Length: 369
Image 1 (spheres, helix red, strand yellow):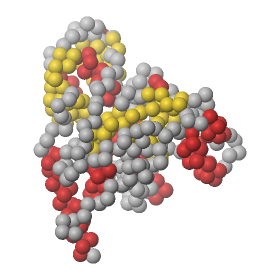
Image 2 (spheres, rainbow, N blue to C red):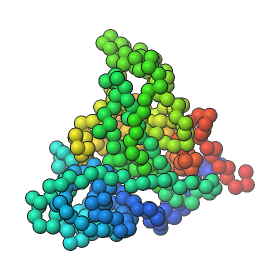
Image 3 (cartoon, rainbow, N blue to C red):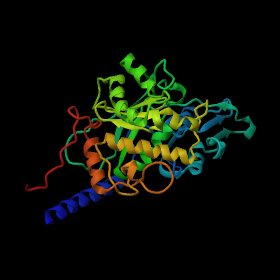
Image 4 (tube, helix red, strand yellow):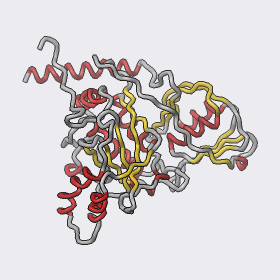
C-alpha cells in the first residue's frame, strides 16, 4: 500500500513539475499559429507579418465562423498573445480597421471587417489552413512541453448513401478546437490536415454495412456484425500507428456515435451527428450545446487513441457511456493525473495506440527499482 501511495505521489510531483514548465513557455513555437478555444471563446496567436485576408481565412478555418470583408481591404499583421477574448483579439490584430463580431445562436458567429461602413463588408473570406509539420518527439524524460500531434482527416467515399461522407462538411478544425480545449490540461494538442477522400477497401463489406440499416436487422445483429464489417471495409493505412487518423463516414446504424478502432488506428466519426451544425458555406453553429457535446465525444475517442481505457468515474472524459449519469449528451471533461501521464507517454510515440504496431508504452519504473 505504501509503495502504491509513493508511486502516485511521484506521478503527481512529475505532473506538477511539467505543468509548471508548460505554463512558463508560450504555446506557440517558431511557426505561425492560431489557436481557438471555443468554450472559453479566447485565442492564442503567434503570427509574423501575415496578410490580413489570409489571417482572416485561418481564423475562419479554425473557428468555423462566417467572415466577410470590405473588398480591397489590405494589410499585414504581426501579433503574439495568449488567452485573449475574441473581441479583444480582433481589436488587437485589426488595428485601425473596424469590425463587427456577432455570435448567433441559430447560426454561426459572423465577423465583418471594414474601413468605411458595415454594409461594405460583402466579400466572403475563404478558409485557409496553416501548413503544419509535427516535430519529431525525441524519447526521454517528459519535460512538460506542448505535444502537438498531426491528425489526418478523411471523408469516406462510397456509392452507398449510408457510407458516403459529404466532403463539404469535413473541415473538422472547429470541432477539434473543442477537443483541444479538453486536452489542454494534458498539454496535448491535435492539428488536423486538409481533409482527403478515402475509398473503402472491400466492396462486399460496403454492401454488408449498408445492409445493417435494413428494417428488421436487430440491435443484437448490429452489435455482432458491425465491428467485423468495419474492419474489413476500412483500409489498413501505410502510416497506421504513426499518425492519428479521423475517418468521417456518413452515418452508423442504431445511431452509434464516434468510435476508436485500435486495430486500424483511426477514429470513425459519423457525419450525421454533426452535419446539422454546419451550413453549406462551412459555417459552424459554434454556440450550440450539440457542438460541445460532439467535441466531448471526439475528445473521448482521441483519449482511446492515446491508449486510455474506459473508467467508471462520473465527470471523467473517459467514462464508459453506459455508466454515465445525468442528462445531456457526451462524456465528462476531467482527466486524472494518471490519465494525463499515460496519454502523454503515448503521445510521445507520435502516433495512436495500435496493438502490435504501436502498443501502450510501459510505465517508467521509479528510480532505484
